[in-house]
Length: 197
Image 1 (tube, rainbow, N blue to C red):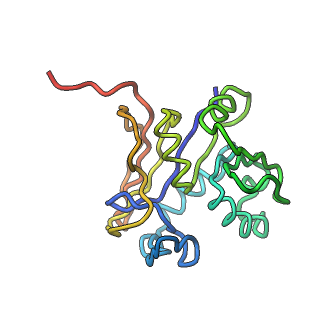
Image 2: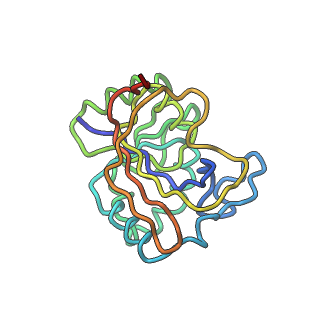
Image 3: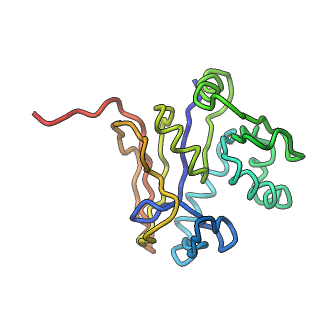
């Protein structure tokens, strides 16, 4: 069965909005686009390279897809996997796009993702896509969280964990701290929450 792996750059207060640049996602008046750059170093770059080199398909929200479709097709040499991966895109308004292969999901997102997980193929990597991630978490469809937690607070913006998540236990399977203080941690789904005695 394919897994859904949520891969995020995150601040200490859980913000995942516009890590890459000021024009990436200024919605809601977000003023800190590009907040990850002061924390880049060779260790973090190597982690990102390894993730990009894995076999995967993409599961993306429409905003993230729009940003990526305007960027990655012109940089195929930098990340060929993004071009060849099947891109499953959740959108109520877009039903086709020149960046292929792409499959558009316009309704019954949780049901469709459950079906896609049962199909043969590589794991589904989710980047950004804050609203989609909320849906996946609320329906217990996230198998792993691969987080890069930056030593910064941003106060407001789109958060990884918002209302609607269900109680769930995770196990840390990998954790390192980069020279710039970024915690790189992989969490795998590990059953239900166990309350104290």
